[in-house]
Every structure is written in structure tokens, then in C-alpha cells.
Image 1 (cartoon, rainbow, N blue to C red):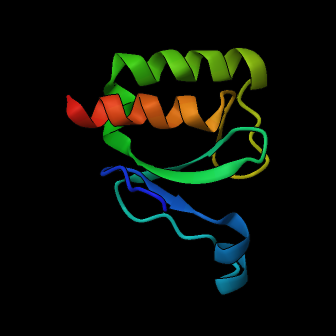
Image 2: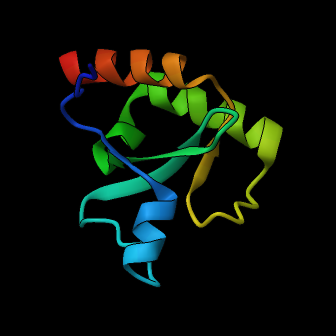
Length: 92
């Protein structure tokens, strides 16, 4: 059984790509790819102003630079750590 964290949306890159040539991101959201399997999440752009998320972005920049061939940001952390961070952002 799974659970949903309000504020982020998990989407399957393969399912989205099969449904449409252009992978759609709703207005006000940003696509990020997380973990070894590069799971795709849609996060609210408001997270970009949060210090916790900005630290995560700094780590992503150090590891991956600004080249993101998947079309969204690549976040270099475990999926569980990402979900923990975003759940804390939802409580702010």
C-alpha cells in the first residue's frame, strides 16, 4: 500500500511519454528526476524558494552541473531522502 505526500506528484516517465510525445508539466510545477532509477516527480515551483530545497539543488549542481538531458532537474539523492525533504517542506 502506498501513500501520497501532498504537494508533489509522482509520474512515470515511460507512462507519460507513451501517452504523449511531449511530457506535460502542469503550470506551477517543475519536473525532477530522483534516485538511481530516475523516478520523475513534479514539485511545486514554490519549493525553489525554500532553503532546504536550495541546498539540495546546490548538491545537484556540484554532481551534475546544469546539463540535464532528461528535460528536468536530476537530483542526486535516494528517493526516500527526497520524499522526506519534500514532506518537511509541505509542513512549512
